[in-house]
Image (tube, rainbow, N blue to C red; front, side):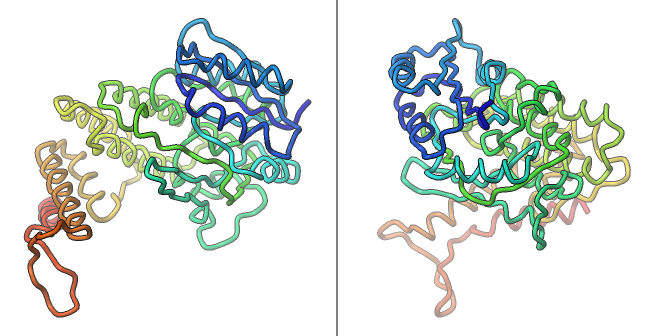
Length: 373
């Protein structure tokens, strides 16, 4: 048995696929198999996979006869994998040099059910953003292994799959397949973290997450963003079926759900404008149905105002707050990067220039807080 099976679902990523495969097969760590699942790509990915498979026996190619989606492709790869651990890597991303050896060392030393790594987002313009695991420590060093109950701050790490390396037998026994549709990571990551008896961290960038300008669901206006609710419903159903989950974890997962749904609604290039009210109503339904019975303290600031508006079902005020917020961000951007000839309001000597109306979001938020109590 190899230590690690890297599972790469492949669909319409020919432009990036060679970089992904090279970043895995070209590293010094060799005790791995790479299972690539061609999800009926039509852009030439099959030829790239065939070329690499011909020269490296560690690459196994599985070809689906019709497109089934990311979740189904990952499930197919898992069924074919033989390694002690599995790592799901998207075909347009890559693994930085040395990451496989670092992950393997952590796995062999701790033998966890789940390893979580830091990762870096790479943006089209060349910018990067490193996502560390420092917040999980919560001011004190994390032990070699722990459970989610012992380190609930792990919930603050974005619920993606690609920064998680999972013991295959544990995952198979858990019977936790990826669900269909967009946002499949939601209904996978939360049950996974709750069930893991041994979690370990590797606060090193072991995954390069490509933020594509085109083709990403996070920048696609579509009614398919409503599919996120089915995945959160699956998480909530699992919580309802497990009385052993402590109240504080339920509270945090509820808060994380609302944060995520508001992120989806608040993004200007996701939910179609004519369906935003409907999406808001779906959030309200879950907010009211799953509000922690022992009491709930919304977060502070503008996010807390949004939570209170959800509780009241006040879409009109919520939409007004969103408009004010976007206007505020636009003004801030113009102040930081002024156009030639732009006029600013003078302030005290040495103060940053201001533009009339730049406090709009804060003013609206403050007024709403006063009204909502």
